[in-house]
Length: 185
Image (tube, rainbow, N blue to C red; front, side, top):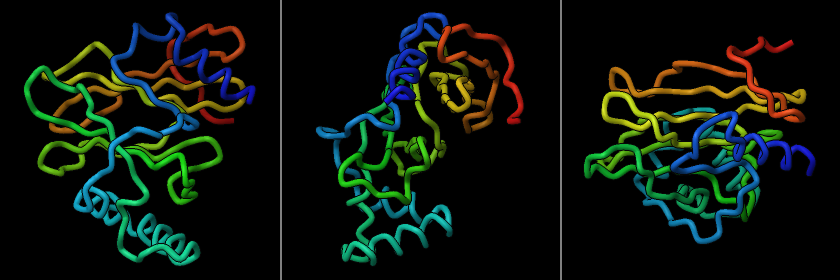
């Protein structure tokens, strides 16, 4: 519970960022989010052999219909560009919980375009779409939090994909942000 409170402070902190356009975090309830197509769900699961093996194993353990990966995911429209192109932010459902797509305190997430191409795949404690942009696409930021600190990785769209452009460290208790990320110790 304390970690969730600290993470929410980081997400809402004006010191870390300007107001995000979109934000979500691991424990957020996904009730009311939209379903994804079987095409998108299958593409995500098949993009990583280990992920597919784990998803198939979890489906078998829970006596779920094999191959129906839609039941794992939900989505929201994502405002990534000024153009009319549509993007989806896809993440695992919060309920029922599927351990394949969650870590100790992280969740997997993907950005998919209107042609079912995966633009980004990540896993983090929190995800945000920022107001800043590069090459016609909004910047994104992920937070990885542990040991009393959150590592805020900013990514910008370059050469057809999202690439890391900066990293900052925020102390969860004080909210103080410093440039650069400390290596894991």
